[in-house]
Image 1 (tube, rainbow, N blue to C red):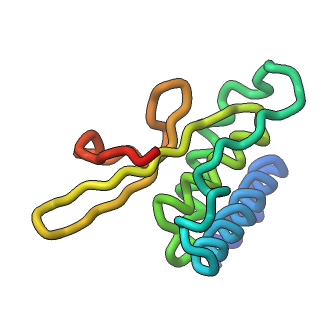
Image 2 (cartoon, rainbow, N blue to C red):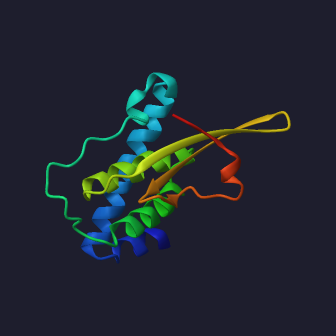
Image 3 (cartoon, rainbow, N blue to C red):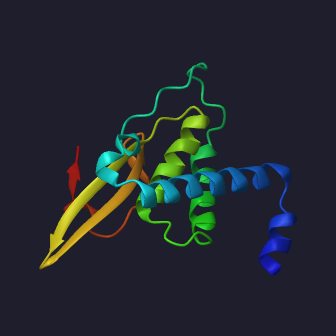
Length: 139
């Protein structure tokens, strides 16, 4: 109940961002359940550039979006790194920013590992983890 009270006490802009974030996380979460990743070219295909000017509306948007994705993902069961990266990329696109989705694979002994992260302007903004440089990035 306290989380609901905290949500209701947010200003209008933060509530709107939280709801948009929840929407996109749910869309991608359900899509990844229903459709295999390999048949979902939309998941890794570059998003089209916005038809607006090249000016970025809010230079702090990436930080706010990443924070919102991290927080809202806690409330969505199974919101994996791929789900989070897809949702954040979509939200950034709506702000006029183009982020790169990276999907990497690695082998740790007999375990096969996969991880997704998001890069903006050459730096990882979502999904950075220790040892991520050992992942082979899929194209």
